Image (cartoon, rainbow, N blue to C red; front, top):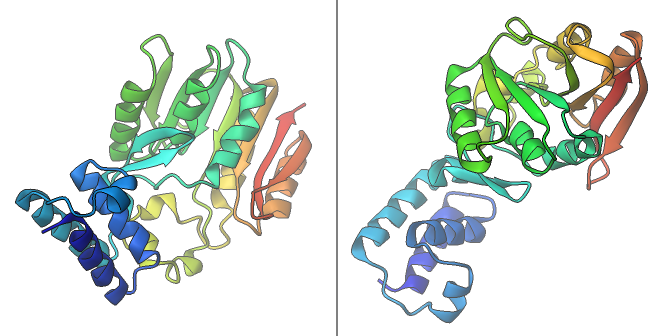
Length: 279
């Protein structure tokens, strides 16, 4: 079968399954399996696809049609210009979270210690370390399987000179020392809302990375209060938040003694990040 025909069949199968952006996903899967680029569809659409690649593509399309996330099929996701390995044990990095990283970066000077709470794939911490000068960091997660992914990503994406460690812990339970920056994208979706999410998220991403309990604020409450013991004076706390949680999280931080608490919007104009410093 030729390349263009493979794509056409994949696109049709995904459209029939009701997959959003079927054409894009069909092309990305074909490129992933064949090791090609988007130009190949335009310039080399008449090239023959090897039988084993054709079969692998059909299997990938079958999985995507069953609403398995594209990133779980390819095993990777781009974030902050870096390619992170992902699987069913970690939340897939999202572009909105790049806003959080970009807000933290200006505060990183040489020797700054960063704590990434609920690190998952490690995308936040690893990006911060990759783009900063000699900061060091610790990633914390309750999931041992998530930490395996984070360690693998750190090993691939960070130089051996960078100081980074990962701790399996229920929030701060096993954390030691003081930090200049604590950053977190905690579970923040209300339990009742989860059942209405897209199947790719609801059925395939780790529930413990999504469920913020009844009001979605459980982890913010704990992290705000417990972080004070681990922040140096004038240390900063950064959160990613849900679009409707800014005032609640801002209030939690101010009531706990944080100053200059600021809300930052994402590119869609929605509240996305809240941060402040411990006076």
